[in-house]
Length: 240
Image (cartoon, rainbow, N blue to C red; front, side, top):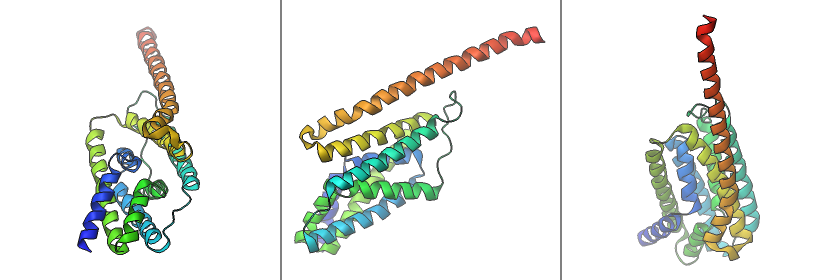
């Protein structure tokens, strides 16, 4: 049983490295408290890997991956647009992002996004395959530990990077990344011929264009604000 746990841990941890779920963990960690993100990942991992182990052991069949991909993409799209709306609201000349959602709301967002992202993902299929020929309970324990460990590593990287970046810039980048994840999820499910790099390139187009537009808009806003401030400063002595 211990050998199965270790095997499952290693397989899931390696499968998560560089996967969209780990990138999501990094992105969430830039916006929410680290313990909220880790707790959400843990709950989602427990649920998803229990389903995977059960499917692999008792059924040996997969969930409808395409339908799940659509739901996942819509969830990520909603989270991305919500994050961008919050980041772009308020004063345009401030680098501080609006206050992050409450811990409870953030916790629910993380659980929902991770659960949907992992359903039908390669890591779920890996756990199901292991459970089909090994003790399902041991596979479940090892898979949860491996997924949480990979998520924790991404959170650590996100927190270290976040200390050197402006909060509003982080929030905007997070929103754009979620839009990228949404597009890539749909492309991976319905256009597999593109491959990993191909789908990533196509999915990157919309966030890149939107990000460029946001950058131009913010620069114009800052220029207008500075011009207005200079005009006010020039007029102030005359009024005095």
